[in-house]
Image 1 (cartoon, rainbow, N blue to C red):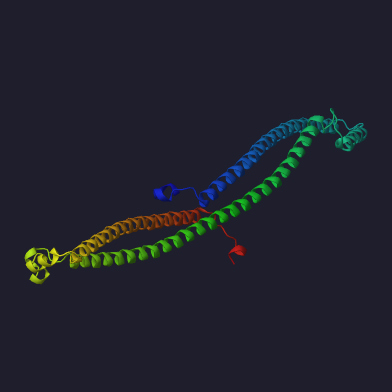
Image 2: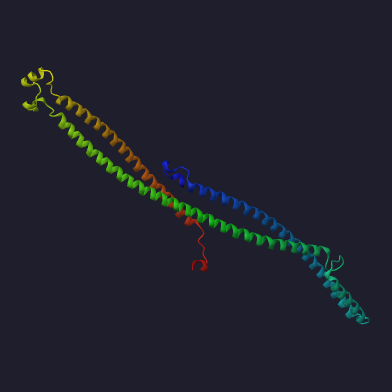
Length: 302
């Protein structure tokens, strides 16, 4: 957005440094979170593999339970049809079941708790512990990233706000300078008009017919008077020299007025550029505040 500033305001400044630093900081945070995301994806794959393995073990155990139920039902039916030796066979079966229950805590290839089931449970427990550790680590990383992001966001907003304040202050100073420049132009113009009028008075009438007889230097009496040495009248030469001096003053004043007008034009352009730059920076601040996260809890709001 700052590219839309006027050409005279596109020089690299502190606000650009802040925005570039924030961008680099956010890119670093993104890379760190992407690394965490890859580890989480790998852990999800591990959890899915452990889940499938446990599901297969459960299916196998359920099939064994189905077979065991059929065997027990057949044994019960046989015991009911043969009443002789029922107590002994039932007692031996209970003993075997009790021994199986006692040995269920240790893996046994021939028992209900097989090494495959034990390994599946161990892998699932390790995956669960690793997932809990990753969850805590990821939560801490997200909290840390959010804090750093909010701090960077606030720092950049404060910097751009300070930049806007400085731009507005400079615009006000330029406005004061523009007023002084206008005052100088008016004063120089008044001096130019007064000097031009004085030069006109010094040069006298425009037409020869407008000169009074007593003001003419070609009168017979003046010519006779100037024939004698040391009696020449210096008024004409002094009038010519004063006219030349006034003309030089008029030229210098005109040149100064032109420079003042050029300065006025530059000041106007600077004021316009500062106004546009401050409006662009203000729109950036409003956009950043509008796009920021405004989800507050009751504790933060009150």
